[in-house]
Length: 346
Image: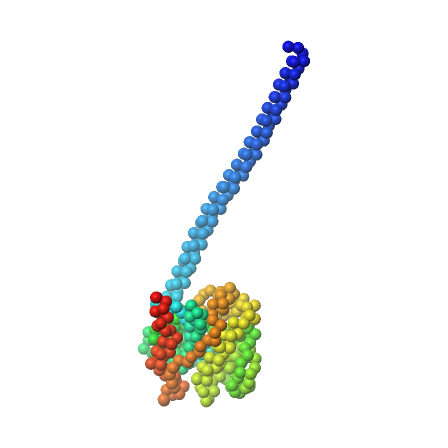
């Protein structure tokens, strides 16, 4: 073997060794990269496991917290309204109470329900009905030996007493929620809506310095703010008495209903929700703008039906409204037809 051949072999071996070293370097770099990737994946997996465990713990904690709150909510609902009748599961019945200003609280030891209104919404169609109950309706206060005007039931036992009293008066109609609004909250809500356009049937002039109530409205179509709407609703004319008040309440309810369904109401929903949370006593407990928007979307655009509790003034005292039990049963049957339940079960 000559020198040339030996040099060629040496070069070949050197090239092979260089390639081997390069291959080993690439393998080491690949191993380092793979190790780094595996470490990162391990770290991510560990983080995911920890986060997942924390999320599961958070989810379980949240679940039990929500379940506990909901159970408490159901217990509170059960406490104030008692058992509900499944015949009325297809409806949402809300008792709306408007309180007086408490001017006579020292005498009567409490505020009274100046307005008593039952709102019933058909859960399937969204159709809404209102039943106005005169504040001077004579009833027996549930769980007591006492009787009196239904407005005084609030003085005796608050919203829960009013719920039971109205339910008994209507032959066992289930009331699912209640809303109690005082004069300030009512005025704030109307003002937040930008006022109401109403036709005032006649001149209304009344002043009661003791209660701070002043009513001065002229006959005609006009725009009323919250305080003026209160005066319009509370005015008791000598000719019509409480019947006139109820008729005005029903007209106002229809106007307000249409106002709430207008697009211009939507920007005011956060402020309205704030008033409902801070100034209104309600069993619903949850009020926000989204909730209110969903409620408004669910109700029918059809004009609501309004009725007054059947009855007549007492013969010996025309300020007392005596319920007509037979006519009330017919009214309840009209509001809650048995055919609806039959159709839903079929």
